[in-house]
Image (tube, rainbow, N blue to C red):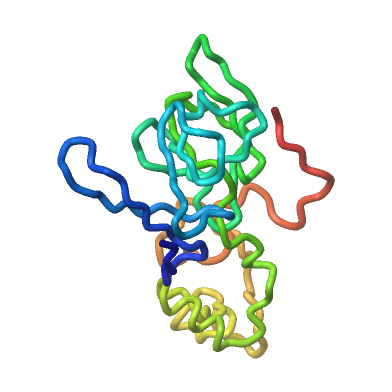
Length: 208
């Protein structure tokens, strides 16, 4: 069964397993992958088939496979690539050290234990952020279920009593926006302990 989670962009899937110790059924909740449907059989383990929705350890997955909801440490129940449309690509295996190299959604590469598990396929709900919200009402309903982080009032639009950037006869910060690491807590607004400011110039490459 596929269900909606209010505070999350991706749908969830309710999966029923047979309990390994008692004669009963156990209901587990997974983050649904693209292509998973109601009534589908989902298999977990080393010998599970390489099909969308199945759970396999990284060591049993061939190179180039797209997986998601990957464990950082074996048994932590999934920590990497859990947002809508996200996935991890298996780059290579090192059987001697029992390690697997993967490419994260950010483009960075990471070495994880080959015993860590992942779900085959891409998390459902991809492309969600491509559509603009267009109006304040949609932003209101989006953040109402998440956390109290909307709307955000700019510091320069405040009074000097409310924010270090407030006040002045027109909206301007009036001082350097970078602030030192050792500043007292009330001063820390703007670019805190910035190593550099301004636009990043040139192309950026991810190192192998």
